[in-house]
Amino acid sequence: MLPGTEGVALQSLVDNKPALTLVGKDITDPKAIGGTVFLRKVNFYWFAMMYKLQNPGSNYKYLGTEKVGDITYDKVSLTYSSDVTKKEQNDEFILYFNPETHLVD
Image (cartoon, rainbow, N blue to C red; front, side):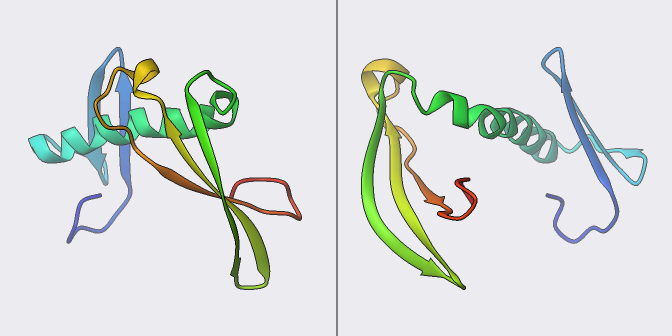
């Protein structure tokens, strides 16, 4: 998050106002603050992702299996329809479904 630095960084995004501290000191660097905004919004997406998988416009493609360590995962490509997102190009995610836990690792 802050290359070349050590210590605990705390981020927040409250009322669309980002804040970032490193070892209790305020960080005001615009690039670091931009990263805070991005990460706070992305983390919310990932926390809610499992509930979004059934949303209209979710496009899946089964990619087969892949063994990683001792686990053979089912791989699924996930993208979203531009008709729904209104974006010209959407992100693509590769999800690894754990057959033992039934979770996405």
